[in-house]
Each structure stands twice: as C-alpha cells, then as structure tokens.
Length: 533
Ligand SMILES: Nc1ncnc2c1ncn2[C@@H]1O[C@H](COP(=O)(O)OP(=O)(O)O)[C@@H](O)[C@H]1O
Ligand SMILES: O=C(CO)[C@@H](O)[C@H](O)COP(=O)(O)O
Image 1: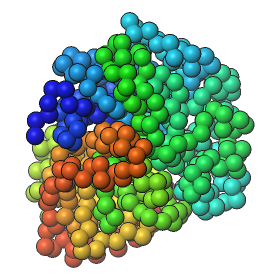
Image 2: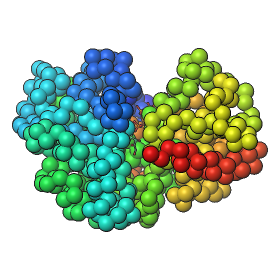
Image 3: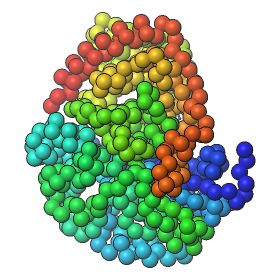
Image 4: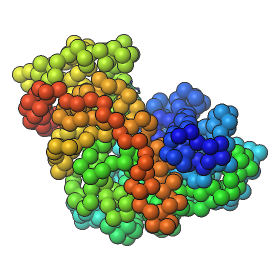
C-alpha cells in the first residue's frame, strides 16, 4: 500500500565499519528510502581504508570519530536533497559497529546542548572529543588488559559467567583500560565514554545517551543477568568508571525527543523520539525478526553467526548478549574478523577484481573442491585465534598455492566450514525446519549463499533490505514507542515482509560437508598450533 504524504515515518541508522547507512520506513513497514555514505570514497580527507586506520603495530585499529560525525552531516543533507519530509518522522533509532568507544572531552555536554543550527555537526563538535581516533572492533592490542581483567574476575570462565564473554581484546572495557594506561592525559580530560551506538544516539539527542543492555554486553563490563555494571569488572578496568559510562538502560527505551538542532536545521518535529541505539548485530537480529531455531549469518566487514537463545550458557568461545527486543531473552554470537575484506583480497588476486568472476569460479568448481581446503586469516582471527594463510591438498599436505578458481572455492568453503564448526561447538545444531537467514553486503551474492546453504545443509533466506541492522533499527524505533504501553516486538512487526527463500542445499551436500567438517576441525587444530606464539 502506498503511504499517504503525511503518514508517519521511522528512521533506522547504522554506523558500521565501512559506511553510515539509513533506512526510512513508513507506518505500514514499507521501506520508502535507503541511503548511505561510504567513508573511504566520500570522506577521503580522513584517509581510511575500509573505514579504519591500521596502525604500525598491525594490532591497533582505530577510526576518526569526526569522520562519523561528518558522515552524519552528509547523510542528512543527502536525505534533505531528495526531498525527505523530516517532519513526518515519529521516531528514530540506530545501531553501531559493536565494541568501539568514543571519548567525550570535558565541556562536550554543554556543546551538545547548544548546537547552533546554522553550522554542521562536524564544525560544532571539532573540540568535543578527548581522543580523536576511536578504538574499533578490529583492534587486538589489549592482550595485557584482558589478562588483568580475567585475573581480577577469578578466571576466564568466571568472567564469561558474569559478562557473557571471556576477555576479548576488542571488548570496550579492555580498550578503556589500555587507553587509561597509555594515554593518561587524554583519558583524564574525558567526561563521558560512549559506545559507537550510544555516541550516535547522543548526536540526535543533544545530550549523552545511555548505553543499552544489548550493546553494553559487548564490553566485558555488564553483568548480563543482573543487567547492571559488574562492580568487579568496573574496578578492575578504571577508577570512577561508572560515572564515565552512565547507567545502562533497556534496549527498547525512549531516550527523549530529538535535539532542537535537528528541528531547526532539518525540520524534524519536536515530538520525534530517539529510541536507544544498539549494536549492529543485535539490530540485525531485530531486522531479520529472528525466531528460535533460526541461525543468522551476517556477511558484512566481519562475518558473524548469531542465534536467539532463551537461557545464557556462556563459554570460553563466543559471546552471550542481552537480547535487544525481548528483555527476558539473550542472543549468542560468534564473530569472525576475516570476512568480506579477506574475500575481497582473494577476489582481486584470483578473479580479476570482479565479483562476477568470483561467482563464476564458485559455479565452475565442485562441492568439496576435490579435497583442496584453506584457512585464510590475513589478520589475527577472533574465532579461532589463528593467523596466516594455510592451504592443504587432498592428502592434508600443506601447499603454497592453488589455482585461482580452486583458491576461490577453498576460501569460501573454508569460511563457512569454520562458521558451522564453531556454531556447533556453541551447541547449535541443524534440525529439520532450520532456516539460515543471511544478511550483510555479501548476502547479495547468490553463489556465495549457495555454498553457505550446502555447507550448513539448510535452506538460506534473505530479507529485501540487505542491511538488516538499519531495518531492525527502524523497527526498533517503531517498537520503542509501542513498548511504553506493553506491546511486544513481534506484535509490532508481524506485518513485515517474510524472509525470502534464496537457495536450498545440493542433494550431495550433506555427505560431502559432514565428512569435510571433521577434517576441517582436525586441520584447524594444526593451524592453531602453528599460530601460537
Ligand atoms: N556481490 C558481492 N559479492 C560478495 N561480497 C560483496 C558483494 N557486494 C558487496 N560485498 C561485500 O560487502 C562488504 C560490505 O558489507 P556491509 O554489510 O555493507 O559492511 P559493513 O556493514 O561492515 O560496513 C564489502 O566489503 C564487500 O566485500
Ligand atoms: O565485533 C563485532 C561483533 O562482535 C563486529 O561484528 C562489529 O559489530 C562490526 O560489524 P560489521 O561492521 O562488520 O557489520
């Protein structure tokens, strides 16, 4: 149904690794506009590659916080340019790449409250950050701080029981501890620490936005059962940290009205509400309307696998987060750092920089790749902690190269075998009726999804909008308003379009990949031995 010109609109933003994206949705849950700003190409003055700066130690990875601010100026100007009537926006929400942190300088709260609508945010917030380069999820430079936190908490498993995860280098608490130790002066000048998600919400709110429970679960600081900061973790991380973080809130919270800056500069209504922003993976869970039994596979900069779970069973691998749409539930997540950027590198070397040729290589090679198998970790992987490129021939001998087409299949099969292996170790199993819901940039590639379907031996579905984090944020904006009167998320989005079946597994897939999975697990162990320092 076409929306009336004055019907309400809901905005969902996603501040992800490589881009800022937005979805505009009407009250009938139709997407009426999508837009984006790509950091590398549209904001070249920040000199990022894939949205980040990789430092000389190859472990420290940051993004310029003012790039994210400028991207928002640009995106809102683009939306205005295509005639979007902001006065129709009833509520907005958003998401951010998880774990990244933003450090607001003393005095920034006053600046946020007095934003002058004649200037853009980038000009107004020039001096508002005590740290200009925000640590992001790709960082793996806080090993010492992880060891310290685990020691203080009584071990890795105890920490996982409290926070949902053992200590991970990219998790915000460990990044905060490192920053306090290595950049004491900048840290001293900080009056508030945000996640990327709550930082973005703060821009819209004109004041500091609370961290929500779901994204807050990616910090190694939140007690995921009590849904409050863990005193042990806070104290082990930095003094007075509770004041710097503010109190966490339910992910469905309405934080307040949009700042008058947006009313005067873009014509938002004064009654437009800002609903708590969350992490991009939690927002994707909302966007795909994940049900119990489904498995979501996000193929963005990172690859992630996540599930809706009712009870948390944290382990030494993977993460448990508070669920973003149901306060009684949880979500389990595995993150793989070598996702799309790894596929891009092999595409450039083996498929003439073309996704079409990359796809053709997948179509032209057989299931199981005649026994050729590979592990591709250009950067130190998160799951598992391995590094380097390791190729094996059918007799398990290490080889230094494979032909281009075989290399493409070895990469994609290897990636999905790894996703399945580690999901199964987390307790996930494929049962009749299991749906694999794919999202993220690479989910537009049907040949990649065919390999995913074959390796998991399950049908693969996608939703129309490849950015489920944005869509989920628009749904959450709508739900935030209704949640105040007790409506459930599933009720609010029940009329949304169902995911569409893209592909089903090849009849031979189960036999080929069940066997290959065992072999992959064995070879992964030997790759891990080699990666150990
Ligand atoms: N046709 C395609 N086949 C495979 N990968 C693709 C295709 N189109 C885009 N991608 C991948 O999608 C990635 C971006 O995904 P996206 O979900 O937008 O990332 P993020 O949200 O982390 O910024 C790119 O790095 C690119 O490698
Ligand atoms: O670290 C994680 C999840 O734990 C990553 O998934 C980030 O949340 C980045 O997301 P993308 O930009 O790759 O979607």
